[in-house]
Length: 588
Image (cartoon, rainbow, N blue to C red):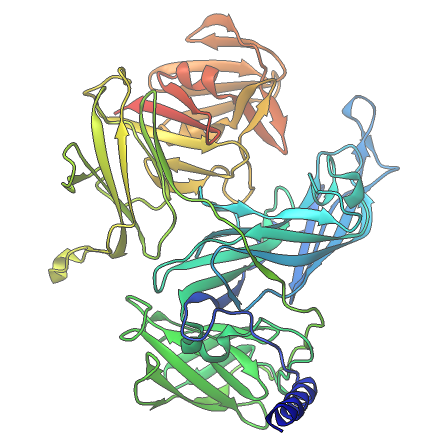
């Protein structure tokens, strides 16, 4: 009788679930931790997507769909002339399926990506669109990346693996027209409570930049997030009558919220607050967080909001953590217009399967020690160095480091160093008598330097560039190689080629361009280096020499062989083969 009753109850539950739009959560078991979706952020369209006299760019994003276009009124004709009979027009739309609301440690996360080509004429230009799906540290911009980045693997519907996904010059034959592909990547292992990482989905469109969305996940107990452990959207979910999208006037300040399917994220003015949650009917259930720590129970907790019948206001409550008493939170009126609720997505949540993930590393190279660590929450990092095991030692930089990698070039040969990495939780405020606040150690490394190092005893700086990465590190500060354009170092005929302006300006020099002779002049550190586009001739302080690779132009940027440029500007260049990085070292 009990089995029969259980069967009847199960059948009723399934029917009610189908009627109400039930979506099974993808999360860890009750009481366990998981990576829970806490924020969805749509990056603003870069300002460079605009009409021009020659090259024109366009981009738009609605929900999980991005539209991009590059148009030129002519193609390249004979002897680089303009062929107006074949105007270039590259135009496509990209859409992706919903992401899970929570993810198990060491998991494979997948999306279904579709490309709709409206016009595929890229002429003889080296232009194209490149969709991406990647895992990296939280709070990055689309043009940024860390050493822990994980790129998705793409499989076309015919079962072949994608090599160059997208439409345009140099892309896979399968992707020159409309296609669908399964994109999967390996998620990271367990984290520490409050630690965050993010999935990034979008399209890189060349010189004007990238368009996309950042989905931030936090290591926490799904039960403490309430409905936030549900998938972003799925099935016939009940999203209510009106959207939470827009600006609100609340008793905790102005609120700005965005909505992607069932997922809602936003900000409010009190203590630079943030909220995130999931919609079910007229109710939004989720979490709030405020400065300085953005962590419960003192600076975070639960929220439950209920929208009014006309969609113009809401009533709600909040509490510290998940056990405190409730306080009042209401939105007296909606500042922006009332919008209808989004249409629920029809795709099922992406599958979650257990797979391994990568870690951190350290190694000695010719000029010092190279460290890479996994990201952690905070403003940046302090790296401490000691020659005594068990001793913290001193911070190797005056200012904290913003990247997740560092080249320690101020070391002695044949010496064993012990490194400790700690996250910076809060900056010092000397006027108020407040010291810098550091978190517990997240990584320790032991490195023994080689028998020779570059000019030991002198203080040195470094610039670190990585092949195919638009980011570089200057003394531990992460910054774009070519702001807003996504330019990365490349290889030509076995030589590492870099957009030279970034390097020269980073070492305090200047670069000059002479269009008539196609000459590039580099001036830095007391030296003058002259090169010519398409020629292997080089002059150093007026003395003629030869290179084995000529400077080249790519997407409007001049690339030169980094060794010939840097070494002739009184710098040293080392290569780290394991990470495909070039490290440029120069004295104070």
